[in-house]
Length: 458
Image 1 (cartoon, helix red, strand yellow):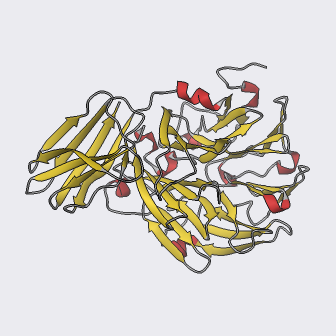
Image 2 (tube, helix red, strand yellow; image 1 turned 45 degrees about the vertical axis):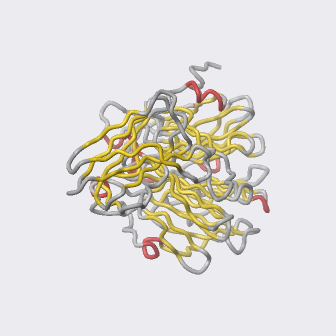
């Protein structure tokens, strides 16, 4: 079979020529009892484009359109194995161990984006989330599907075309959901439509009013929940640790500004790809990630490479790393140089990712931020990059002595390495010596004020 840099052209996912012609992305990949299931999506429910049915790849790399799903066109990106019943929930479908498929009618017309354990009925039920905020419980034994919440009411989001729920995950007595609404008003600081929120079985709690795209972990193993998001200052990694029952915010570089809009962060994932090792795809960069936290802190975060892929999902299958892309979208004519919605699958191994783009990026803990004297910033990733430069800007009327502190152990204890005084209205830059590094870095102002602190890594 022809193979071009890990891509097999005969496995291309191609939508109907149309009209309409919108998009065909690979929303989810799931190995299931010898087969690889490939669930595609179009841009906005069934009327936006046809031909995105579920596909099934066999061990010999032959592919078929799953007959039972012909004509089931829509926007589906969820995947979840329900171990008590040995069933796979994929898109609006429930797939048994012998590959029999039931399509749930209540889910078929929705943009289904997440499936998670049920808090009180985990042996028979799951939660299913759709992009417009519809949250269901699905009985995977009877296929009864009941809507529990409209999250627009619970979390103050704004409904269809103004909200973009992306993922859900359950562990440690909480169901966590996220949405990634972000455009010009969010960048300008005029509006905050994004959400990271949790439900304890009794009430909802908004954790952050920022855009978030993915939530994941390894359930009881490791004692952590990870959630990825961003704001104008940097990419964000929120971590819940079972040991101290709280969320901690870490900041990561942005490898590209091409992911700075809700429509351009199409399901970057947190997923195990090697045994007990997580791969994190966030804002144009791959990271390795350990599920463990010690002392309530994480430090097993290391950049692997940068990329421009739009990856709906990736998984391990038959010893390979398989990545599913969203490659070419006519977008109803908004992209006049693309005539056919199509996307490809890439096959390789996890360590191939180190041969991609060099880790590099920019961001920091402050962007025209009101800072208080003696209050440290969020920790910002410092390991795994070559050249490092810090730019500080003072928007205040008084000088700001700003101390750079590093955590080289990785367990949350920071020590001062440099103090830089920035005069009112001025910018001051600091270039770190070649080879200088630590797990995390943060900055602390000695006076109240408004400041920016941005790191450039090359």
